[in-house]
Image (cartoon, rainbow, N blue to C red; front, side, top):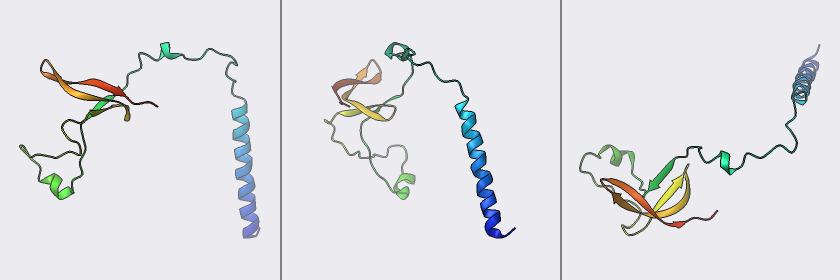
Length: 114
């Protein structure tokens, strides 16, 4: 067999393997047409991560390794600007940082639409 024939035989074998695998997928049981949707009520207990971001900055690696206790890092926002409230990494609201007893919190001031 020539090299071209070997390549063609390999392509034919690979094609046949893909066809066999796709036919196996067709044999899977189909979902129920018209089945009930999940609905919001079933999702209310799903945990999400909420993050409050008061600002960002960029440092060089050299500047980063010089940081220690008492170092100050200037952020890209002014003190009066609202913090971003993120759910799973996506901004969903803005708010102001507050203290609640001896902990930090955030008071939502506006929601971000869609």
